[in-house]
Amino acid sequence: MENTKKNVIKRSMKARTATGAENPYARARKQRALFILGVFAVIAAIFLFQIIHAHISRSDVDSKLAIETARYGKIQDNNAELKDKVKQMNDENYLEKLIRSKYLYTKKGETVYNLPSDAK
Image (cartoon, rainbow, N blue to C red):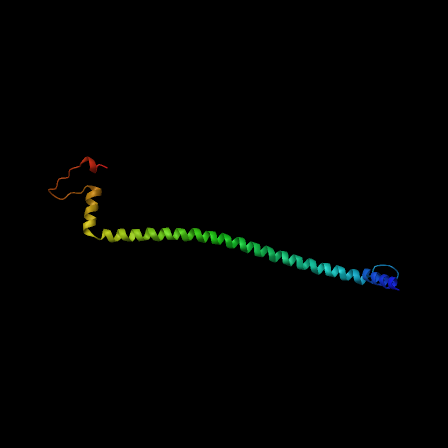
């Protein structure tokens, strides 16, 4: 009796009809299940592609941000130096000293002597 129960269970698991042919409903269910799994696999692949693409884009933006942040810091330093120079240019004593040294400007009646140590 146990053998007959096992045989019946095996036959029903194989989804065959009494004549031994495969059950068309079982085949349709398998095909439908495979189709649904395929659709889910395609959707999962699309989402995975989007996630990977977003991660790559984010890393590109992060690297560009780091470069631009460094560039911005250099520009701020340069701007601070230029502001200091503008303040110095408004000082008459500094401006007079700069013009005298750079352009060899002299006052009336003043004589300039160039010494070898000044040639450097």
